[in-house]
Image 1 (cartoon, rainbow, N blue to C red):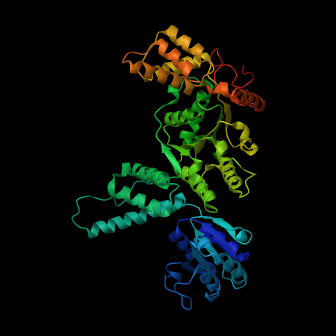
Image 2 (image 1 turned 90 degrees about the horizontal axis):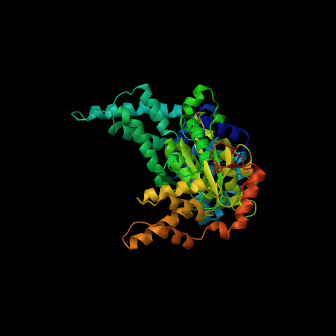
Image 3 (image 1 turned 120 degrees about the vertical axis):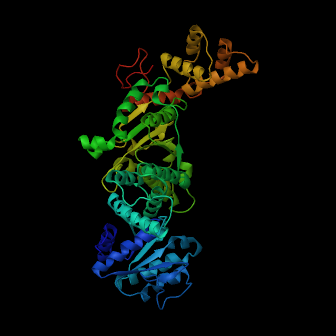
Length: 531
């Protein structure tokens, strides 16, 4: 069997004399299958875990090693292995805290590993490396299965199902023994981003429970449940489309243009676009309540794409390296759901402290995110993996300069307080939503009284007015609304200086103006003058 791509890369590191290499993955079985192919260059491997101890490639205990040995002892026992053997350690990083001598043992074993051709391979779901090992341990990425590898898996499963059906003679359900190429391709596309075991389980479930035409949908459903299970991203089901958003016409029209490419990425590439042309996303700044998050939900609903929300409170962890691992897993998960929309809410909080925190966690997370923002669009197998990012920020002053560089986003938009005709649309939407109405003249007066109000504050005015009317079990009146205006204090008054500063910064940096001018959409989108 020829060496796999990972085994080839690993052999290059081995030949270069690297004594220790760390690989972050959940896929232990697939990793060991890859290592089996090292036989082509005359190498073997041995694996260790705290439960099973040292084992050879056939799973047999290795003579001369200590059963039930502590992690530090197991590390030093690599000298008992045959030469030209990769020493694979599973979850050794977990012992760095419970058995601190493990770190010292690794450092002591580095020379043994290098001089006797017994390199150490540290395999764990977490990329946790203490400061003492950062200069001595190389990091290798273990890519998810490619489309070609997933394609090879399907005939194996069909064969297994055929054999199982033959053994279970008399079964009432006819299981598939072959599938059309179109169905197979759809199944592979649905499974992209899953690990080998996840894909195998999803394929098997689809083949055992669904007709061929419904199999891709079963796999997609399993992938959706994976998002919820991991808890790193929040899966949201938006119900409001861009048509139902009051105002912001320039931004909405621009997003519709973006959606044609992001939703039909494969067709766009076949037409002539290159992967780098695929839309990457938008950065929206402005005061809270101006509709930035609503736009993210509405765009996803309009395009018919899944909406994932990245909450940094779910990413940050207490263990060393945990935050970085969670961020990487979250971004991989978003790619697994592609095409999709990823909403990074209040991105300035996600990147707070970058460059100033003593632990370096914020800086490393920012580096991960910025690199991904620059390079996303194509998966590891060269196929499109479009994830459209809509990042929102309430305090653009705290955004790091690298985030604003060209290539991170397709457009940077400033969402200001609504113009008068936009306020009218917002008011009408929320009145209709609650099945209430007032005469046009009273709506005009409400628009005038809410000149400094955000859409969220206008909604709160209407909710407050409706509550007052409901208490007396009568219909909504103009006085209810006008009284409510006095009770809802707009943020623009308490943060007037911040708003002016945002406007000036947007002007200076050439941001796009999300609100249409007073005369309606059609004028320049550039934020040249905000009065």
